[in-house]
Length: 252
Image 1 (cartoon, helix red, strand yellow):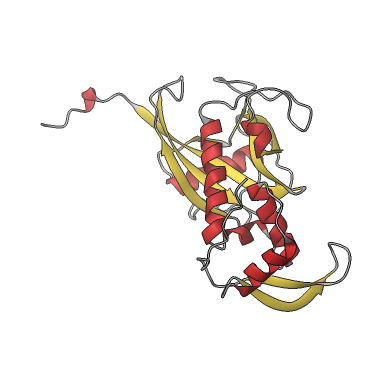
Image 2 (cartoon, helix red, strand yellow; image 1 turned 90 degrees about the vertical axis):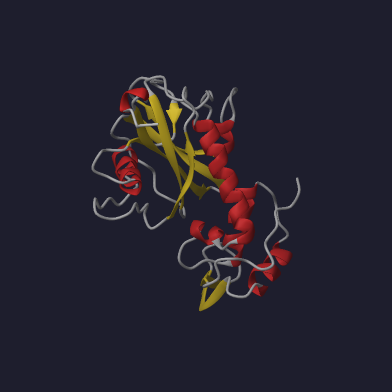
């Protein structure tokens, strides 16, 4: 059958970003309040339309820079979120996901250590870090006292998928270290796992597992007292990308 462009409705491509960090021992996501219709005034994930002259990673970098100021944007380079881990998450193409027209979104997942407060811009009139449980909660009040409304578009689903990707990947990869500074203690790493998984872990068992997994952590030779108490040994991420055996999530 010959190709007939008139048989296909026009559509647009967007990028949406699930940006996760650990703040105050809680897994938090970046949210922006929409300043334009549709869903004006509602919280949403940062993102927007991909321009004709840019690829997906460049579009993700530009949108994050415009809406929050968190991204180091180079038009000729892939997206960088303050040196964070960045990967494509999934593609979302429900015909009714955007009331304006047919829009396909390529979502990205970014993980980074304790990021600074975002600044709003572009078509976002405010931006904030919020605990993921508050953003995913469809009614009632969040921890900051603000009434929680559903996220705009299908962003609750995208956020849930991003959170689950992070929770599952830290089981079998060294991805949890992306939430840590370049040098960190085992206790700081354990608090990352606890925040992402939403569980409490036994400190001794955790220490034994992470220090006994080949290539996971490398001692730096230094110590720190930034967490209070006795000096704690500092580590950096090792060369291992896969954990064997994996660090399985406790059943809750």
